[in-house]
Amino acid sequence: MRDDGTFDDPNGPDRQADRSDDTPSTVRTTTLRDLFGRTRLGSLLNPRPGRTRLAVATGAACCLGLVGFSQAGFGPDERAAAPAPAAEVAERAAVDAASRGLTRPSTALPTPTPGASASASPTATPKATKPTPRKTVRTIAPVAGLNHTQMNNAKKIVHAGQKMGVPRRALVIAVATAMQESTLLNYASGVLPESQSYPHQAIGWDHDSVGLFQQRPSSGWGSVAELMDPEYATRAFLSALNEIPGWQDLPLSVAAQAVQVSAFPDAYAQHEWRAGKVVAEVLG
Image (cartoon, rainbow, N blue to C red):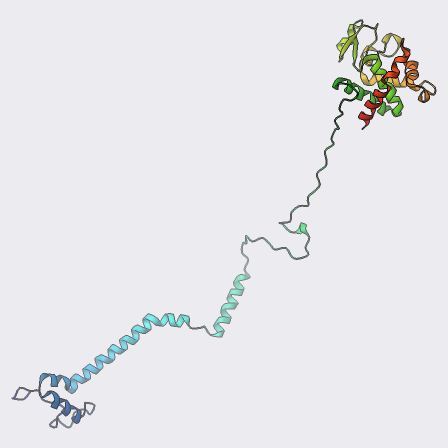
């Protein structure tokens, strides 16, 4: 510092010759000094060489720090976003392919190949089978003025004749005969208390006659138990009818009387049309 209170100007004309040449030129320094005078501001604008080097070094360090900070903060993302070399991509693909080839449990169902049979696929639906149709029993409604009990007895007569294989005409004669003898009710006898121990729908008093055809055990038609069974009684009547020569060509009343030997031989004829209607209903 000079005696007048101003700082020595290192870049002035009086500076030593061994000073560094990297300081501002004399012209630029002189001009600034001329503008601001010899003041402290002027000394700040024209610092000494040692201070200049310190400032430059400090600025360089700051710049390097900023560069390092930018590399530390943003560098990894930029490097991650950059595409990998082709060799590295191929190596990763090989590793992935090897890992997919490893055996591991899988929950996915296998996809059936086109053209494969349905039985080979675990998800194939079993072939539906047609249900076996149930055998239905046709309901036979009462006809010709009969009630359900009478119609059921007529049905038993027709079914028994079918088992024997007799023609339709024999069935009509049998039903007409039972209509006249018992009104198609299974009779027990008041004379034979034994007959009342079997299923029956009425009790008669015509000697020992029993059943649908009023057949007498005393005449050799069968036992009481047998004659109280509608099926047995029908077989007994049709067997006797079949023994009459040419019964198929005889009038109904004549054929029936030949079997029954009734006191009213012509009474059977009145039931012929009704008997025919009943047999037609049962045979369907």
